[in-house]
Amino acid sequence: MDDSRALVLEFAKEPAAGKIYTEPMGFSDELNGYLIMPTGTDEDGDGLPNYSPWNTENAYLVEITDWELGSFDPEASDFQVKGKASGKFAICLQKNDTYAPSWVAGTFKDVPIRYSGEPSWE
Image (cartoon, rainbow, N blue to C red; front, side, top):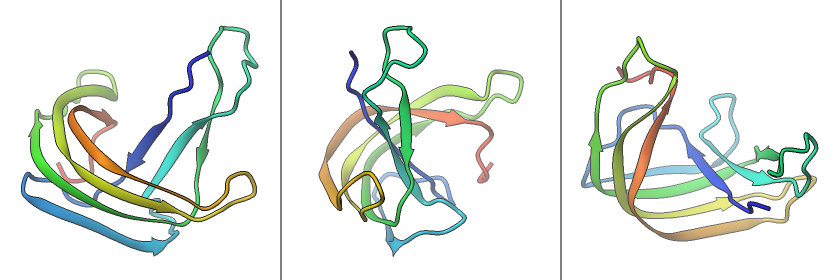
């Protein structure tokens, strides 16, 4: 069974290479970021785990070293891979009813940039 996780971060402006982005610890209606975690169950019987978002107070620092992004195509699907990014990150998440306080840090290289609808910065 797939054990993947995904990190979703929301940026108010389009990121750019050479920039560092920070978000202080907190939780807002603007949803500055969240993790998508496997639930460990296959409720629909398709052989894949179901996933649940971990919405909790979080803080992050992201340094973008490379950012290549194409424009969103309003005539295509909302979900579009249009570029790639590289950089470093550190993220802290507060506990909730399911998960203990956690953090993760590392680097990423040539990660696909995927639109999930038209971005607010365009």
